[in-house]
Every structure is written in structure tokens, then in C-alpha cells.
Length: 420
Figure (cartoon, rainbow, N blue to C red):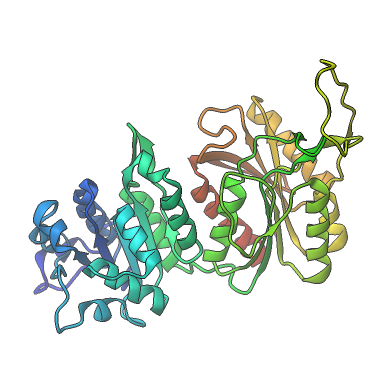
């Protein structure tokens, strides 16, 4: 698509690399991060794929980090740096006024204001209106790593998940560096080209580890952080699904609606109860359920003075094997973790598990590989189906892996990939 002559010359690039965002109006909000200069590249990339981009900046950002004239050149549109009687925040973010809001980069300060409902800058006012009008929002955080790991900032992020899409930063040199423009483009295209492919679907997700008690204070467990399962639950909600999360133990906080469990038996009962009481279109069993539990649990704290204790373990019940027995029509996604094995072995074990559990697909990952260890923010997986077709998702954020996995699931459930 070429823009008609007579418009701003910078718009000559619109549609030059594709038209995935053709006809879409995108509001690009820029906050006070030193990464603000990267918004120029993002704006131009969005335009090259068809978008009409309108920039919004705070006055302080425009005066100290990125001049508004630079963004006017980049987008070909006037830049909003303050609110006037023209009600710029309403004109950009009220019902149906734009197709997408992107905050790139987004500071911890802006995140906190979003959660608290504070709208004291043009950016936060636009976001406040957009959250009410339900215009999709993408946020790409940028800050020092220590700030990103601040538990209160993480709580703000977790409160916003499910309502907006996060494009996770890259951890380098002690900083949570803003995502590459290409990653944000991919997220924008996913949202604006039918970004709710799971609308109307009911999805059951399990996440985290379970604990098995030796005595009242000692346990047998594993190193699962729950991050992958939580990412899947959040992305499924963003894609329009009605999600029930059964969550054991993990480092990620869960929504207050989650069904919380401790032991494998509690998770078994919770999953069976859900499958028995509701019709689920999809079940994604991402939890790392303990494979063994002590044969006997001591009701009192065991005395360690003897210097030795023999612990007898018995296998726990396989929750995954019960899903299709209880709900035959549910599309079942199983997970298979291994450690330091070749790709071929990982795929074979996944295929074996698929048949054992009557799953529709199995997601296999190797916890012994650099970057995708237990507890990390990234993952790489092999997705295996009943025809032994394999999709390899290379190392990237667990949110990105969750999104791509759910896109494949949606295609299968909606009958668009030839599996049905």
C-alpha cells in the first residue's frame, strides 16, 4: 500500500514491507526511559507493515530524551505532548478511536500509575481511557534489572496481565532492556489479525509443582517455578478463553481466582472436580506434579539425632492419564520434561507419553540446556502431535512460547490445520 502524494513524505514507507497492519491506527506511547530513542525504529517498522502511527509523549520525555519533532518526522503525524481542549486522550483512546495502544518503552513509574488509575501525563491518560474502552494494549518494559525484580513492581505487572499483552525485556548487563521492535511488531500482528482465537473456549491449565510431606515441615518436591504454566494461563485469557488455573507451588504469583493446591493428591482431586463439573474445550497440563510421595507421612517432626533415615517412596497417580477418560472431547496438551538428552530422544519420549496419556499434543523441553533451566524466564520446546509432526520453538521468553503454543492449539481446536 502506498500513501497518496500530498500526505507527509515520511508516510511514503507505509506498506513497503507488508500490509499485515493495513488500515490500522496504532497509538505509540513513549515514556521516560533512555531507550526512548528506539521508538523511532518501532514506529517506522509498524508503518512499513501498513500501520498509521500516532505518538504520545510526556513533556519531560520530549524535552530531555526524544524531541517531538523527531517523532513527527518518523510518523508523519502531530505528536501529543500535553492534553488540551481537543481532548487528545479521548480522541485517541475512546471506544473505536484506535486499534491498538503500544507503550514502548514503558517505565516502572508508568506501570505503577496504570495499576493505581493515576492519569497525570498524556501517556497515562491515554492508557486510562484505553483500559476502559477495551482497546488492546501492548507494553514493553525497560528498566534496571533490580527494578524489574522488585517484588512490588512484579506485583504491578502481574495485576495487569490478562488485561494487556507484555513483550518481555531482555536481561543483559544488569538491565531489563526493552524488547526488539520486531518482537513488538509480531505481537501487534498477532493481536490485530484475529488476536482472540480462543474466544468462547473454556481452558483448564495446571501449573507449578506439588509438595509431598515427609513430616509436617519436610517435603519432597521438584524445582518447577510455575512460570510456563502461568504464562500459558495469561496468554489464553488474552486470546479470549475462559481460563481455570489449578496452581501448586511456584515463584510466580497467581490470580486470586486460581484454585490453589499443595500435594499431588489435591491437584488430582481439583482437576477431576473441574472436568466432572464443567465442559472444557482444552486442558493444558503444564504442572510438574511430583512423581513420588513418601509411603508414610509422620504426623510429628522426625528426630534427626539418629543421623540416618530411610525413606520409602511410592508413585503418585498420573493426573494426565485421567483427562480423556473423564472428558473425551477435551483437546489435551501434555508436557514432558527431561534433562540433557539429544533432540531425538526428547521427541521419542514425548511421542511415547502422547500415546500413554491419549494426549493430542505433547510439549517437550530439556531442563539441562543453557537458557531453559528450571526457574528461568526462557524456554525452548518441541511440540509433537499424533502424526509425529514436530514443531521446534527455539529459545525465547516463556510468554512468547506460550503464545505460539496456544496459536497452534487454537488452529487445531478450530479445525484450521487439517488435524480435525
